[in-house]
Length: 184
Image (cartoon, rainbow, N blue to C red):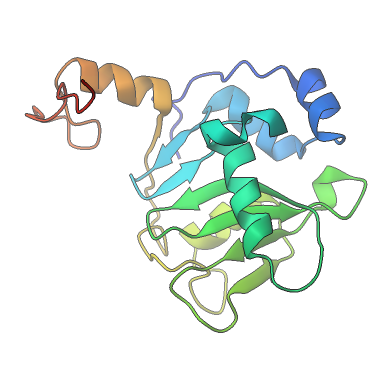
């Protein structure tokens, strides 16, 4: 996945470690330095890492709160890192002290049984598993990335700059809605 429209998220990892009480997987930290938070093919958002106090702002904290509310099998420490257009929440199950050993768990909004599915892979392994169809079936409710061998990533910053220029970030075409505001 080309990183030409990615950008360094410039994350204060020590501050986040203190705020969350644990570190983060190395592949996620590397992803943030090359790509940053943003979207893959306008269907899968990689969440901005923020502190638990930032839950009202969305991002990692807000979606983690949503995932914890949806977990129906007792208490388990979750940390959200992705969200799909179908409202699936992609998390790490943070039970191990080594973040590189955290499995990915997915709450699938449009799949009723099982709602939660666990994958013994990290973030990049999970994404590659989607792109290369390495699972028995698509782990997400939306199959946009399933078997997509040419995924495209755009960071949130690049997406906003293209919108400010009046362009649809995903097509490059003029976007008549790009500068509309619904706030008074």
